[in-house]
Image 1 (tube, helix red, strand yellow):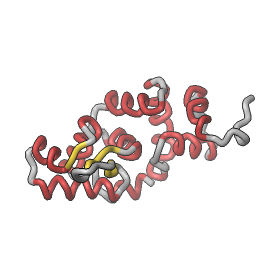
Image 2: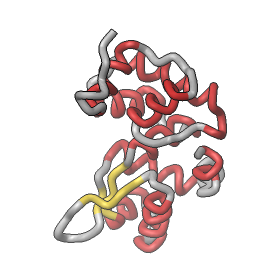
Image 3: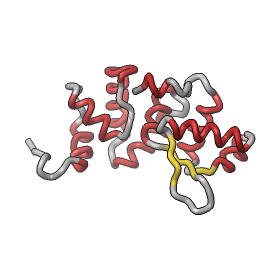
Length: 159
C-alpha cells in the first residue's frame, strides 16, 4: 500500500506535503482557505487537495457551501511515515480519535511500518491492527482492547 501511496509523490512534492500538513493541523478546510493561508493560487490548492483525496489521504466533508477537505487516518499515517509534520502532533490526533495512549500508538506505528515497510496496509488504525495480528505481528494490549469494539459481539472472544 505504501508503494501505491508513494505514487502520489508526497515525499517529493513539497507543496503537496504542505497542503496535507495544513489539512491535518488546521483542517477541515476549503481549498480557498488553504490557498489564502499558504499563499497559493486557488486552482493550485484545489488540485493538490483533490490529489490527496484521490489517494485517500483526504476526503470531502459534507458542507452546503463548498468542498471542505479533512484528513483521513491514511493521510495522517502517511504524513507520519514521510515526516511532513511533527510526529507528536500526528500521534496526538490519532490517539484522540481512538482514545489510546500516544506512546502505545507511536510504538505500534513504528513497529508496523518498520516490519511491513512498503507492503504495509495503510488505512484506519483498526484495519492496520487487524492486518498486523493476521500477519503475526504482536499488537499492544491497549490497542487490542480499543480495536475489539469494532468486532461483532459474537466474534469477540476474551481470554
